[in-house]
Length: 107
Figure (cartoon, rainbow, N blue to C red):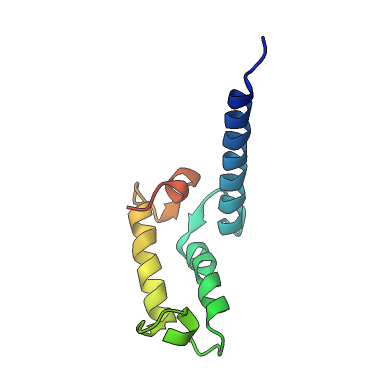
């Protein structure tokens, strides 16, 4: 039996999506224990903040965000926002994110 080219493309895409999800989970699961703690989550989510905070003062000024008239965002505010996101993703309330919880669409 031969698979159609369309089916092969779908299977390749799905396999790539799974590999990308696994790679993302591995990047967030810093200690490799198969679960993501809040500190791991904040560290990974803080990467972009650190890259954008050009002067390293812990505050994203409007010019660092490249958004006209944006309000400044402190690292503490950034952590608060992502802590709330972590808690929403933690559907079973165990303070750890499984692969499924981390990869689920944000609520």
